[in-house]
Length: 256
Image (spheres, one colour):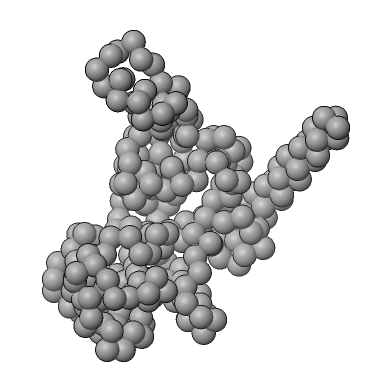
């Protein structure tokens, strides 16, 4: 792979096996004749993102965005094709996942850092920065099981945003804490993006995407429908959504 490429998908397909119920799933373990329904969440997708690029990923629910992100972060693997990721990934998606509830907030900083492949010396160098950003006060040394969901999200954001990632993935649905903390989060994301980190922004909002990104990728039904400059990609996505809404409206009217 070229040294300047951060993320590369080469003819990637991800297929899921869908069963009618748990009983059918269990029977399939023992009987080959029990065939599931196959669903392609990602269908023969190819693209590459260069280091330092800022890219918006557009798509309605079910377009395949989540599956694509899970493959980038290594949560799942493709059925066929190759996914290559070059650099440390920080994903601001499920902020409360990956904590040990019996560990304190401080201990979980090290735990999450180690899961990301960081050495203790690296984590130690940013520990104070993370604690200051999370602003949890004395709770930082209390078990995470005593935290509210909002407190866990604040700590999760503070860790993921301060681990000095080489690739940052952000879901626009992210909402952390009160208004003041959300402003703080947005400033941090801007700071990271402006530092030259590779940035992948998952969004439905074309206006917000234009503020962060120079390129846009539009997905539908597991395939890439458009890949180009952000203004053109945003226009393509908006027209695609308007067309889908109009088609649904026509179908409803015919059914009456």
